[in-house]
Length: 294
Image (tube, rainbow, N blue to C red; front, side):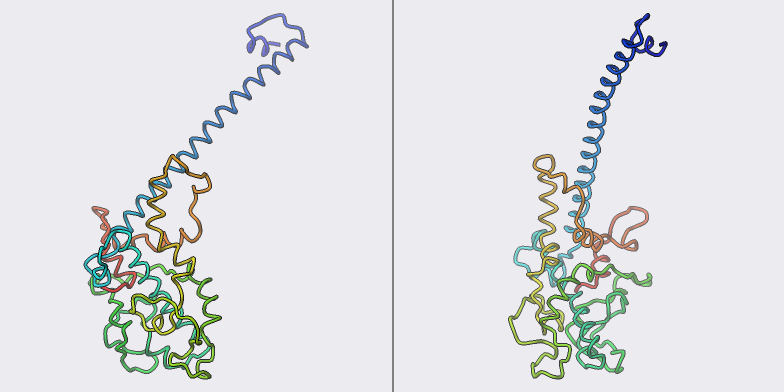
């Protein structure tokens, strides 16, 4: 009974009355706890939303600084806004990845086909410096294709620093590419009479940069792929998240989607592009590490 007396401040309570008082106290404490837990959960949600906005701001800053405005590919834009510069860069990045994916797809069925040896640049993961007279591994001859001049050498700006293996967009594009390739890339190019071995006759897609020969030849309609449009509109989406914060934000938008995480991973500056002292990012080095045209 001492507990009841301590909780209620009353003495001499009967057993039944003491039990009832304890139940009342328990109910009140439970209700108070619910209010406290709801406040904690609301605060957690608010913190998560704020963290998302911080992340959006950081990566929008990256999208504004990674496209190199003094490169020929960005200078061709009539009005190079932050959005258009990013969209141009994203188009280049996707085409560069597709160049290698088309090449690898053809090699799977035709390892010795000449188009896979002479028309494509080295794999991005290898980060082999590319020049206008790059040696072809299988033949020892040189290639003067457009891809050779479009993809700069990583050593051109990094000097003697170790080469960095850049992240890849292949996983992001893989599903859309496979669906397109099954309908548009002939696994036996020697059996048709098209000018571009491996390409079936049909509707032509978009290839606005004309920097990569395989993409230009096979013309994938990547501009209609969800994986492409996700990145193409990414700057606008990040801006919308920032501007709509605390207005009509849906709680399900706290976490980024898998496609968005793939894009964010590709955008994240490489360690060798970050100054160890000032922590400033060398965005030109990131551009070069991604193998984009200068």
